[in-house]
Image 1 (cartoon, rainbow, N blue to C red):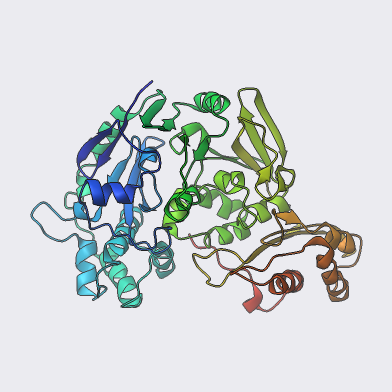
Image 2: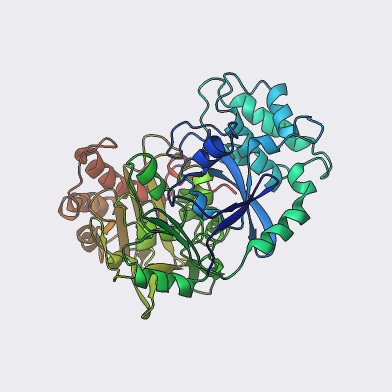
Length: 488
């Protein structure tokens, strides 16, 4: 057992044996370390003003990712390297090339959002030598600028990608070997428990230890990426106790590409899952590009999106349509069930006390099937779904519907299949007349609510129209109706 969290902040080793479980990285940086380059804007992971980089060891290598410090808990940082904008400048005070490019291209006006943009561009600069414009725009999805517009910022990214100095100039490249050695020394199999008054945070040393912790504390809050739980604290001011952090557990971060599908650990982030999903299920990967911004995708996990049971979670509809199964684990062992059966009612899942989501298995759509996912939101990027629909269609040799699976989020208390609509279509010819007639069956499957994202009437009409769109795409619709592009 251990009683302290250890990580590296810029170049300094940090050891914390006194820590509230819900203390955010942003508060730690600004209030306790006076690193005020990291700004607070939205406090919910939307604006990107608080962006920092977090480096961690993955498969023996050191990988840096942009994250939102406002919703990242300090308790999740064990054995990581946190990098703020203050760390970028060279030793002689010269601006980093990313910073200098923002100056040269006039990418900063009021300056409040600039540190966050710098850190997002820095993360891209570290990972991609010659990014395309699409890759640049994707890296900036989670950053909001209200002054200059994005064109000069994109130009700064293009400029810096063309002029890469020697590795000795960059502070992270220069110290990479040293940081790796220091992070290795911080790792271990001990479970960390920190008590602060009546509050406790727990960092299990293994998946087996996690199972035992939840057996002892079945009402504990499990935190993987904190992209949802973080808002419980920053917006709802909820007190969580105890909090169990699992984002460091390597056994939950495995992706296995199998003959018949993808096996994805519950701790795998959207960003890490993207390559495998884009290769095997490209329509699903297109949806991932619209889940939050890059910072959220670097933190958020598919397993967490399932475990929290939100009726508007983006990943359950396509997973249900694909026939995914979820694997649950506890000290009693493991069990698997269809994901569609995991969701029982609003806020209620088929999960026994002490059980946690260990992973999911996603079957590949057959080569002769049609699969599509549609997210409807007020903004294209970084927005919550009003509705999210997924369709998987198999036709027989005569052009009749052999099988169809339709699942929607945002239309009911849980992600849910449109079984009445499916029944209206199966066995019938896949024609415009058949599809048009089946639209009315949505009224029997869903009774959506009205909220600030959309009215009930809008959601119901959208679901009906998406069925028409899916039909048009499967029979060769014009290019403007095609599914959104998958960006690397």
